[in-house]
Length: 320
Image (tube, rainbow, N blue to C red; front, side):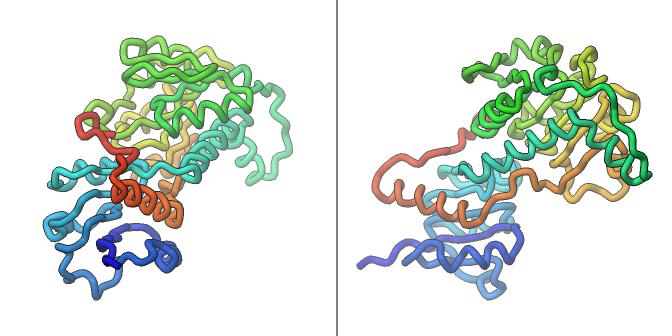
């Protein structure tokens, strides 16, 4: 029986999660775990596949025999923007667990702001017992999602179950049952209706810095929440953080929930840390389940080796 082609694992994930997943992954296939110091100077030229998240800068030069590259997450900008890449297919991680986790985060944040989470948290700390008399319902709030790929479409469906009015925007027209959608030409109309803006865009040259003061100023200011709210779990590079912080300080935005930042970890001197109207999570909205990632990669390698087309291949022109 011919030995299967080796696979490289170079994931800047929690090390224990990788070590727990590896023993059951890729049966019969040699695995080169770059997290093991003994492998860092190893010959990589025979490896056919690489599973990466912010890999070693020299990896793709050393692994000259690769047939495909697999991203450790849904995003691929960490690869496209930082490396000289061979002309090979790059495959995004698409999985039920990752999609569900992202939708859970989006629904959580929308409900947190709807149900006055920050006010009640502060009242608890101050030992104040006071019900907020005015409590709008989800049906009174329009959530606008920017980015209608797998993650955005799933979040839209789950927000609708909770009763929110949901609209969506993407550069090209998408069709989602029960959701009014807008394309690039309809951005201002989309923003004008939006009470809670959800950022799930990939990072491309077109989306870098798209969330700025000009955009925030076009959000609905007449909604029942008392001002627009911004959630971003897409990519940190899509937001201009100085303008975001200024808008949160002067009332252009009422509040924000942020999972991603331009630089991670977020600089300790950032004003976002101390803002009472900001809820932050450390890029944890949809952390990749490493076992699910490896199953996804195994399935795609199987397709390739059977002569079937790979799924979820990145269009390098669009960046996703």
